Length: 83
Image 1 (cartoon, rainbow, N blue to C red):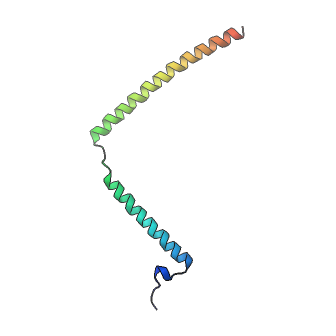
Image 2: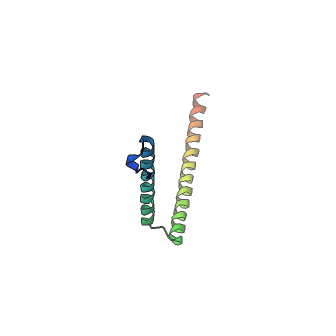
Image 3: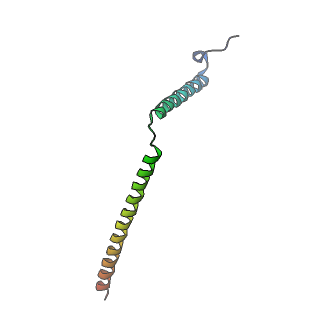
């Protein structure tokens, strides 16, 4: 007795085999795409990390200054209203 082909299998077995083929095709495509990636060098990574850290610190300082100004304005306004 020969092993049935995918087309000869009953419904669920045929669907499972089709899904597995889809998963295998997807993983092959992922592997092909990952091979296309150009990874940064260590120096590029260090420079971009430094730029991001500086940017975050500067934005943090700006937001902090805006918070202090908004707090003082709000406290002053509320102080005038409730006197």
